[in-house]
Amino acid sequence: MTAPSQAGRYRIEQLIGVGGFASVYLAHDDELRSPVAVKILADNWARRPDVRERFLQEARLLRRADSHLLVQVFDVGELDDGRPYFVMTYADRGTLEERLSGGALAVEEALGLMRDICQGVAVLHSIRVVHRDLKPSNVLFCSRPEGGERVMVADLGIARSTDHLSGLTLPAGSPGYQAPEQLYFDGAPDARADVHGLGALTYHMLTGRVPAKPEQRVPPSALRPEVPEAVDAAVMRALDPGREARWPDAAAYAAALSSSTAVPPPGGEPQLRPSSEEAQVRVPEGGRRPGRRRAIAGGAAAVVAAAAVTAVAVNVAQSPQAPGGTHAPGGTRATASPSPAGGSTSQWLRDDSDIPGQYRDLIVRAGTYCQEPGLSPALIAAMLKAESGYDPGLSDPVKDEYGISRWTPSVLWYWQPGGLQSPKPTPPFSPELSILSMGRFLCTLGPRVADLPGDPALKLAALYRSGVDPLRRAGGIPERWRDYTEKVSRYLRDYRPV
Image 1 (cartoon, rainbow, N blue to C red):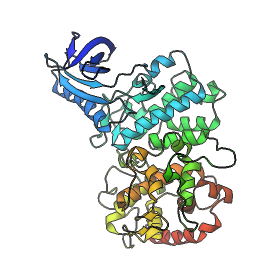
Image 2 (spheres, rainbow, N blue to C red):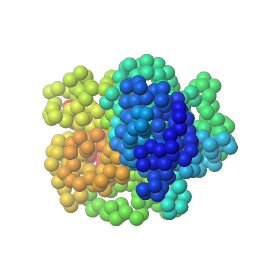
Image 3 (cartoon, helix red, strand yellow):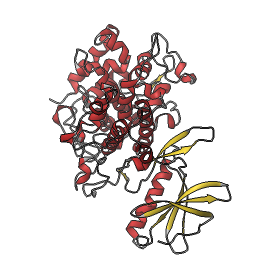
C-alpha cells in the first residue's frame, strides 16, 4: 500500500499501526491545529464492497457511541485512489499492550484501569453493540488537557450490533481473549463474549500472563498472592467457558470487581456522588426508596463513586434473551425474541392472571435477565403489582416516586440505559425503562444477599425496597418490609404458571 501524503484536509505524518485490513497514520489537522489518527483501508481490500462496508461500519458504530471512553470518529472521506478513510482521536500515550510488555501492573492500577475499560465497553452494550475483540492492543491512552490521561477502547472492526447477529456469525476474536463460543459458527456471541474478554484483560494486567486454557487455568492470586479473593472470584466467573455462568455484561462485571474491593469510609457507607445535589436529597422517613439509595452506595457501589460504571444500566439486547441466551430460573430457556415463547409468555406467567398484556414481554425480559436465584418473571410481576398496581402514570411527589416501578429520578439515573452518561430521567417514566431497570438492579445487587437465609425471591423483593446493608444487618428480610414481601408472596402464587 502506498502511503498517502494527504487525506482530505489532514496532512499525513507517519505510519503508526498496520492491521490485516487497514493502516493507521498520525496526521495533523492544520485547520484545527491538532493531531489526529487516520485509518485507511488497504488497497487490496478497497475494491471488495463487503470489506469496504465493514470498514465504514466501524466508523459508524464509533460515531453512534460518541463517547470519550471510546476512540471517537470526527470525519470520513475517500482518497484520490478510492480508498476510504476515517479520522479518529489520536492516542498519544500508546496502548495497554505496550504497558504490559513490562509485566503485571500494580493491583490497584489494574483494577482502576479495568473500571474505565468496562465503562467504555458498557457504552457499546448500551447501544446494542458487541465488541468481540477485546485485547491489550485495543485499549489506548490519550492525554487530558488538564493533565493525566484517559482510557479509550478502540477497533470495532469486527464489532457487531446485536440487531444483526445470527447463528451464521463467523468465528472472531484473538487467542487468549476470545470466548469459547467465538471459535464456532454458533448462536451469535452476545455481551457475555465481551465479558470473557474483559476477564482475560483483567487476568493479564494482574498476573502479566494471558489466561491459560480452562483446564489449566488457576486464579490470579495463585500467581499474585496479593490479589483479593473476591477479585479472584469475579475474574474467574468472567472467564467461565460456559457463557451462562458469566456476568451478563460489562456493567455487571465492573460492579463485581468494584464491590469486592471497595472499603467504606470509617463510620458509614461510601457516598454516591458527594458533589451531586441529587445524591444528597433526603427521601422522607415514610418513603419507599431510602434503602435503594443505600443499595447503590453500599451494594454495587463504589462503582458509582468510581465513575458510575454500574450506572450503564439495562441493556436489553445483552440480556440472556440475546442470541445464544442463558437458562432462566426454573430451567426454561430465554430467547432473543421480544416475546420469548414465540409470541406467548405462558411458560413464565399465568394466562388467567391480571397482568396487563402490554407489559408481559417486558416483565419476562426483566425476569430472565440473569440466573439470580429467586428472579423470575412472576416475581417482577408480583413486585409491580405491589408497587403500583401496574399504574404507569403513578406519581407520588411526596416520596419522589414515579411510574409503574416507583423509581425516584436520582436512583433511576444510575440504572437506566447509559447510566450517568445519559440525561437524568424525568417523570413520567416509560414502562419499558422502569421495568427493565428492575432486572438490572436485582441482577447486580442480588448476589450481595444470596447467602442470607430466607426465600430467594422474597429477599430480592426486600432488596428492591431496602437495599443491601439493611438486609445484611437484619440477617435476612428486615421486619419493616415483611408486610410488603408477604403481599409479593401472595401475588407470586397467583402469577406462577400452574
